[in-house]
Amino acid sequence: MLPGQPKWRRRKDARPAEIVAAALEVFSEKGFAAARLDDIATRAGVSKGALYLYFETKQDLFAAVVRDAVSPNIAAVEAAARAMDLPFAQMLGLLMGRAAAMLSDSPVGPVAKMVIAESRNFPELARVWHEEVVGRMLGVIGGLIEKAQARGEVRPGDPRYHAFAIAGPLMMGVLWREVLMPVGAPPVDLRALAAQHVETALHGLLAEGGR
Image (cartoon, rainbow, N blue to C red; front, top):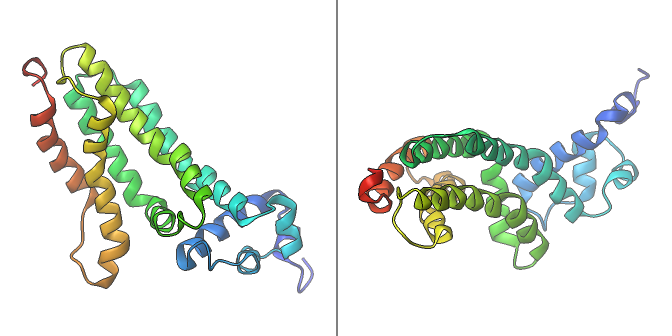
């Protein structure tokens, strides 16, 4: 390795992943509008020209961040839901526990905050976030509810709205951690929040035979 040789030359195959990781850091720190491709390239240790070989726009980079850093976590929750063959009450507790762990330990929170703050000016962010994250999570929960309704375990009602009611407190917890804790609000344990909410929600959702 020669002195001054750019980092990307010694790891050509790793360039896209390094650029995406750098974009995640810069987006989380500065937001979408203020993030500059020059900053992302510098953080990744590549030239701006090298960055453009893989990503033409910041929107392309954001889509890659969601696809590579967030979507695998959603896919893991989807796979866990497909593999479960348990009563709905048990499945919901396990699934929400996994979701809370994912939200606690992955970069979902900072990216969600950015999407909410900037999607009015950059609607493509909201579209990608809906398709890759929110829509899929609601689909998992709604699908489990619909099957449980067919078995007589869950009360009648629109499965999608039930899914909103179940997922809502976790999303509030994520925003609390990202927006309010940095200015002094008391901490929120997403795992504890999920466990308590599941107990509360089940009393309203379960039919008599599903309790």
